[in-house]
Amino acid sequence: MADATYDAIVIGGGNKALTTALYLQKYGKMETAVFERKHEIGGCMACDESGVPGFIHDQHATDIGDFYFKMVEEDFPQFKERGYEWIPYEIPGGGIFEEDQSNYLISSPFADPDQEITAESFARFSQRDADTWLKLWDMWSKEGGFDAFMRYLHNPPHPNPDEPDIFEAFLMGSKELRELGFDRGWFIRTAIQVMSDLFESDPLVTGLIRIAHSWQSVPSDIVGGGLYSLFALLSQTRFGGVKGGTHSIAHAAYKCFIEDGGKSFAEHEVRKVLIENGKAKGVELNDGTQIEARKLVVSGLSPHQLVFELTGEEYWPWRTLRRVRNLSYWYAGSVNWYTWDVHEPPNYLAAKDNPDLPKVGWLTLGSMDPWSMPLSHYYKRLGQQCPDIDLVICNHVNRDKTRVPDGKWSFLAEDYSGGPPLCLYKHSDKWWRDYKKEHMEAQLKHIQKFAPNMTWDNVIGCSPQNEFDETRMLNLYKGCWSGVDHNPTQLGRHRPIPELARHKTTIEGLYATGVAWHFAGSCSASQGYNCYKIIAEDLGLSLPPKSKDRGY
Image 1 (tube, rainbow, N blue to C red):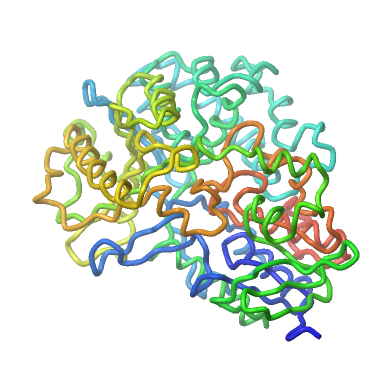
Image 2: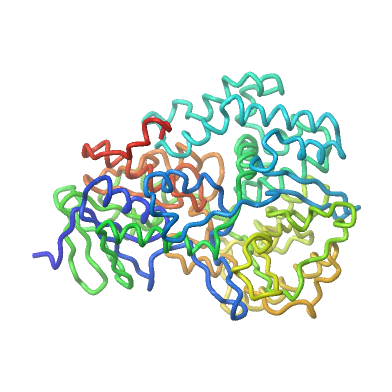
């Protein structure tokens, strides 16, 4: 006999699983319980005072788009009241080139709806490129590109993986994109090739690829990654931060879930899914406690954990086993997120020419060479440190002073150029500790090329996080920040594999979601929402009233 019984059991309290639980409880009218291994709900929406007391650091998820939780805001009116406050970047993107301190900016559509300010910045490199950006923006904002993107994000993939998805169909029919040279060949072109087809300025091509790469980590020379980089770049214009850090999202979602009657159990790790006659009947915890599920079980863990740990090979088709076993992790894996606590913000040399640079939310600091980013991936593959650092500065504090003591500053430096992939090279704890110290020195020296005041005298503390630390997140198998790699075979309707992309498994009553699911790794709630939609379709549950009108 079971020790407890619920309609729905959710394994893991991370972002996606918690979103599914929210909808199951409120709109599915199911008694839902979440079981979480850690001491609290939230998963990768985590922040704390890890560097210096009084300085709040995002430990994983950091900048987010306004569209990440748009449907949750609409479907749960109390979400904002419970602590979710999205703060847009004044200027979402920009970059400085180390060769001559030249720079560019990408303005927010909330401040610059027609993108004339961005075009003016691009025109410093090429008037033709400025005009191209405006045409791209027409495609995105007036021809329906962003609306198609939203429907693509917040609807499960088509049941037939051979069918074009929502966004692909839009791109193929876009008049503006055709006029810019789009053809079907772009679906297999690299980011360097697609951006070079669009823009003539090599420095600008490099800067735009670098910003897009920061968000999606697809090597810019990988076949088929070009269009993904392009719409990642366009969507980043809507990025910002969450007041107080991303853990505020977890708090708000948790409160909504509990107030609607949901149950959560922290420090309760699920050992396995209980399966009888091919159907998921509940879960067993590490202490042997058995919890019955009247209707269904949802896994929020990685594909590998779902198939090989929670269930077992005997329950899965041979092709599913092979594909999950052979998923790729190393492209996205070795990223470094170092949060620096400082007395004063970086004083960029280029700000004398462009005083708006300190306001940029996602500022790239690197060379003009578009091959500098593929080079970093080549070095990583060999287990070596790339000599050229490609850095991005995440600047939350400019709009959110709740993260730092009065008069102080902090910023997150994201770096893909350093460190061997954990899934390819095994090192001791001491090796990683020494590596962090060396890499902190390298980062600081690199930043000094652009902001000479960034010396150790200005530094109060630093919290270095890399894939070694990401393994603390149980669903980040092999330390890959995006769950599984972002490459064309593991994105969209192929993510994580076509057989699992629609969240339903071959085990009756067992569903799966998480950062490794459609459309890509991010802090977006879309994967959890899409999982609920599949469950609702299967069991005849209600959808939110606004879902039909908004198209998702």
